[in-house]
Image (cartoon, rainbow, N blue to C red; front, top):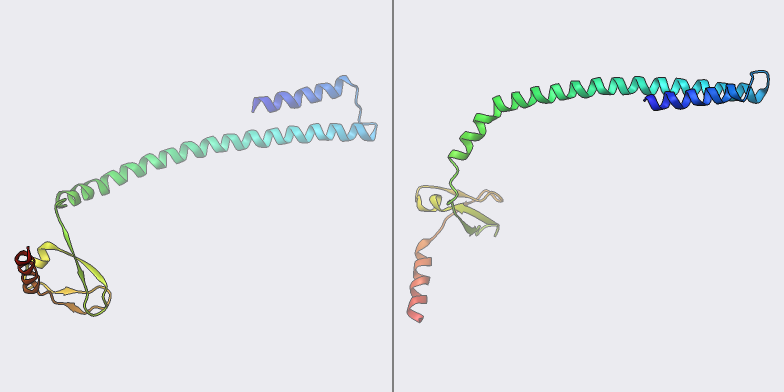
Amino acid sequence: MKYLYERVSYLRGLADGLQISEDTKEGKLLIQIVDVLEEFADAVNELAEVHDELDEYVECIDEDLADVEEEVFDDLYDDDYDDYDEEEEFIEVECPHCEHTVFVEEEVLEDEDADIICPNCHEPIYLDFEDEDDDEDDDEEDS
């Protein structure tokens, strides 16, 4: 901001050197313009100071927030990934009622007591594994 003050001082010195007086209309105008420019330089300087203060304040808040996030969420995220099984596989099943495709975990399919409910039409989906076994047997016999 020092640069703005230097430029305004230069213009004021130029006006004095050219002996521009406030006696003429043009002289009054030029001197008022230089005064307004100096006020602008003051305002910009003040805004820069406030900006720097706010920037420091935001950095402090960001650091505090990072500390809070670490305290609150660090344990939460660590526990979530321990239970995640990368080997989980899903089987694609078509709902016989609405023909919506549903993905079901293999573990659920292995449990005969588990109910599979279509998330689209909310009707139960009953799977008949015997038909699939028969189809596989037929395919093997054709070979």
